[in-house]
Each structure stands twice: as structure tokens, then as C-alpha cells.
Image (tube, rainbow, N blue to C red; front, side, top):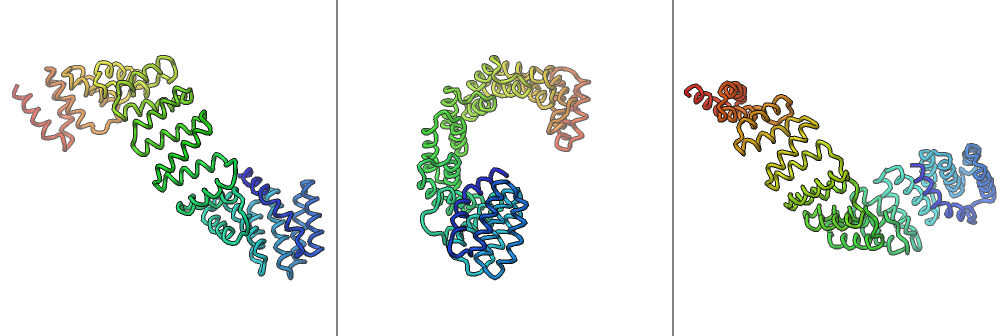
Length: 396
């Protein structure tokens, strides 16, 4: 927060000094403001505020002088770390009647930027729009960006777009944050091609900026273009810009998204082997899922079993049970389902009891089958099927 206040002071200070010398300010007020500036130099802000507040009573019949003094109070309050006091002082200044248009514009700009720093975005937008409407001459790009940002934060995207374009066109060295906001505005307005051109320009100016490549990949992810998203990630990875485990995980997930699970599994296995990605239960579970998607069932079972050994989890054992069930390895399926039920955390225990009962029945384990099926029939959804299989057990 403090750095934003300091930024505002630095930006608006030249306006303050210029207006202190205007002919409309009385000589007494001018001399008092010069005394206050000397107190600023010694950082005696408490004394400066005391003198300014006392002086406001002397300018009660001079609206312009009174407004200038209140603006000085606002600046001094910021320097003293009291932004709320600065807002109050500027509100008092703006309430003065008959102020010159240029001076009113300066006050609006100062007040608008101050409330923007306080994240009072709607008030900031309205105030800065007032400034924009009356300010004369060429407007500073930094001030235009403030107006555009306030519009963006209040979802006035159609208004933010041209203001940002004006800000970017008014300086030779736009800040990175300006381009990023311009990109975001264009994207949210569904001007995807224009947004992409802005993003390509950002990348061209700074090819080694990993954040831009992440943004490019995310651009295509949001447009559900998995191949282009993966291409962006792969290029960045090849250039050494996506070595963070989270980045690598996203790249692996993208291989799975575009239905190349075997490539994703091999890549993840390689990253685990060279310790680029830690071998956690989550990583092992992901490997199991990927190998299962790739129809490499033996590898899937290997990694799921390792995941379950590291961090026993009901859902992992349930998945293992399903694999063994499909492979008709009935005893193994029954064992995995039982472990899943013991650990808990599964979505539908009645269904798992039913599958355990079927597995035990087909493995010739009648007592185990009866026990599992009796638990399964406690579920209304499974009762009819469980009763049918129980009758078959009694008849056999």
C-alpha cells in the first residue's frame, strides 16, 4: 500500500508546486506553503499539518486558497502515512466553489489515484472520468493507465480498451503491466486474435520471460486448443524456462488432455527418475492414471500400488480393485476393494461392497461373498442386485 501512495505523491507533486505559484494564490498563503515545504525537508510532518490546519480558518473566505491549503494537507498526510486524512482533505478541497477548471482537474486526478490505491474502484473510475473530461492538453500515459485500470476493475471493458491504447501510444517505453492489462481486456472482450498479437509482441520483446510463455499456454488452454498450448509449453521447456515442477506437471497434464497419455506418462516417469519432480503419492497416482489411460494396465497397477504404499488411500485401492476386476483377477480385486472400504473416503461404499461380493463369489469365496453382499444390500441402490446374488449363493 505504502509504495502506491509514494508513487502517487511523486506523480502529482509537480502539479502542486506549479499551482503554489499561481497568481490566484494570495501572498500570505504562498509564504505559508513555502514554510510547509521546508518542514517537509526535515520530515516534520506533524508540525506541517498543525500549521496547515490552523491556516485553513484564515482562508475560509478565499475558496481557491482554501482548496490549495487542503491539497497541501493531503500531500502532507500521505507523507505522514495517513491516506485517510489525505482523502478527507481532498474532499474538502473539491467542495470549494468556483475553482478554476484546470485546478479542479488536478484535484480530481489526485483524488482519483488516491482512492484507486485504496481499491475503491468505482469511485476511482467516476473521479478519473471527471478528470479526463475536463483536463486540458495531452494527458500523461501514467494517468491514462490509472483510468483504464479503474474501468477494467469495474468491468467497463469497452471503455478501458481505447484508454489503454491511448496510454500505450503516448510513451516509448510502456510498462509490462500495461501490456498485460491490455491483453487481458482484449481477451475478456473475446478479441482473441488482437489479444494474441499483443501477447506475441510481449514475447518478442522479452523472449526469456517465462511468465509470458505461461500466459501464452493459458491463452490456448482457455480457448480449448490443447495442441497450441502444449506447443507453447514445450518450446519454453526446451529453452529452459519451464523447469519448475508445477510447470512440468501442467505440461504433462496437457499431453493427457490432447489424448497422448503414453507420452505424458513417459515424460513424468523421466522427471521422477531424475528428481526433477518429487516422487510423492500424488505423482505416483498420476503415473498410474496416465498408464491406465494409455492402456498399459500392468504399469498402471505398479504405480498405483506404489502410491497406495506411500500414502494409503481408499480411492486408490478402489481403482486398483476395478483394474483387477476387469482383468478377472477376482481374489486380488476382492482384497483391493476390502482395503478401500477399510480406509474409507470413497464415494459409494454400497457399490464397492457389491463389487467386493461379486469378486469373492467368482473367486469361490462364499463366506466372504455373503458378508460383502449383506453390507451391499444396506444400500437401496444395490439391494435388489445383492439379494439376487445372495439367493444364488444359497442355491449353490
